[in-house]
Amino acid sequence: MSTTSPLILIIEDELPIRRFLRASLSDESYRLNEASTGMEGLRVAQQQPPDVVLLDLGLPDLDGQEIIRRLREWSKVPIIVLSARDQEAQKIQALDGGADDFVTKPFAVGELLARIRTALRHSNAEAMESSVVEFGEVRVDLVARVVYRNNKEIHLTPLEYKLLLTMLKHNGKVLTHRFLLREVWGPSDTTELHYVRVFVANLRKKLERDPARPEYFLTEPGVGYRFARAISQ
Amino acid sequence: MSTTSPLILIIEDELPIRRFLRASLSDESYRLNEASTGMEGLRVAQQQPPDVVLLDLGLPDLDGQEIIRRLREWSKVPIIVLSARDQEAQKIQALDGGADDFVTKPFAVGELLARIRTALRHSNAEAMESSVVEFGEVRVDLVARVVYRNNKEIHLTPLEYKLLLTMLKHNGKVLTHRFLLREVWGPSDTTELHYVRVFVANLRKKLERDPARPEYFLTEPGVGYRFARAISQ
DNA sequence: TTCCCGCATCAAGAAGTTGTTAAGACAATA
DNA sequence: TATTGTCTTAACAACTTCTTGATGCGGGAA
Image (cartoon, rainbow over all chains, first blue to last red; front, side, top):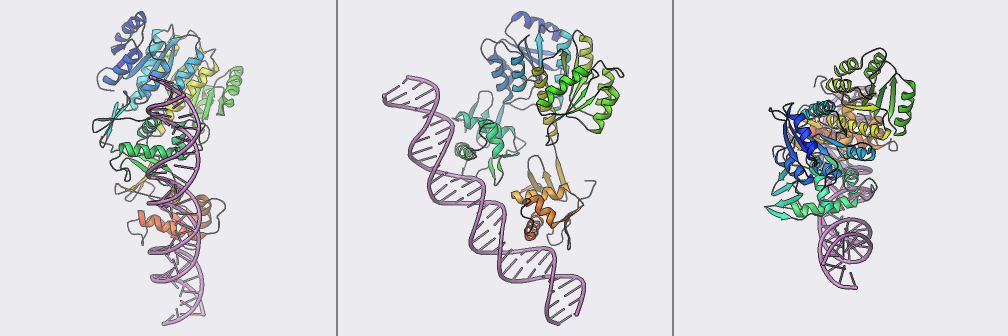
């Protein structure tokens, strides 16, 4: 968060509610960005990283869960979900999917503002990441979910990309085979440790200068793997 | 948060609600502490720091705001406030006073559980930040599971690292060969005392300035080994 | 001094883990 | 149904770690 006033991104398709939020929030001297579709919201979030996101779950184009998931792939920005009453399952799903708070419509402005302040307090501690990660010859656009090497697009399969994301997210940490299996393949498959080997080999082949002498996807024998990228980058 | 299941402190004077929470939460295999007054809650929180606090605002002895304030003087534990409907001012005051979330009674269990999980996720993330041990030229990053010496990475094998951890954990204490064997090699192998010698030698070679004149991995003749690191560090 | 004992060091082979390749299974698509 | 791309699985080569025995060192006792 910069020294200027906090930036809030509203992702909401209904104009009246957007108007209402705009009025309530700018009274508090927050800066605002608005998006009326999920895709637009993701794009705006990337271009101008907000300090808090207010997200309506009922958008026309993308599922709310999907938006949360895609945002969380590269950002830790607090997400406050707005949604209609009586959708408990949805609430739970949103919170477990990575949202930080939930406000039920119709909501009291005071409460919403207080929850925004709480979210801002939290986000103060955590640093914002970039939506593009680079290492060596490789550039990963986390929002577009496209990987380039020497500016040439490299195609990754879904699981390859998911594994890459997981390793990027835990940059520098040793990740056990078991952990990677759980993160990428899901909680069921905690046995087939060999998958990880094959897919790390694939990533090396596609992204390392010399796959036999990896610089980024490092092996920790007997433990697991570690992604090592210089901190400065 | 330790490796055991998360500890939740319930501060709530009404027995029926406490019972209800107890049933709902222990189903999820959380550990529970309960307090029926604010003072008791503060005392329990201090004696056994919880991972999440569920706080009823309407307690007989202390004002809810007061409890939040006193907790926040020394703890960052997530506080989820429980309170009756239609007390918006109170809600706002609680959130601004340092509470992290607010659930309105009567609440849906599923939602409460989801909010607890969200709170735990937050506190986990903060705890993960740093846990580094240093001695001499050596730095051990316990989260990343990486060891540096003069800022250069030193590779340790699984058993070497495990032995190092064991000795760090019991800093200053004399550890018998038998104890180290049990801790590092497992309960079966309590005979082969030679292993310990070889691995301590390895650690010295990798981490001591002069392996022949160890400063940290000290021999206690006839007994075992002792790790000695200045307490101040 | 010489012997003895516990500790340190080294290195070779055993045991286990990881890298690599490729073929088959499977699912989605045309 | 054929095609394509992806995932799973197996086999084996290459590599790392662990175990083990041989050897050397040093202090204390005879």
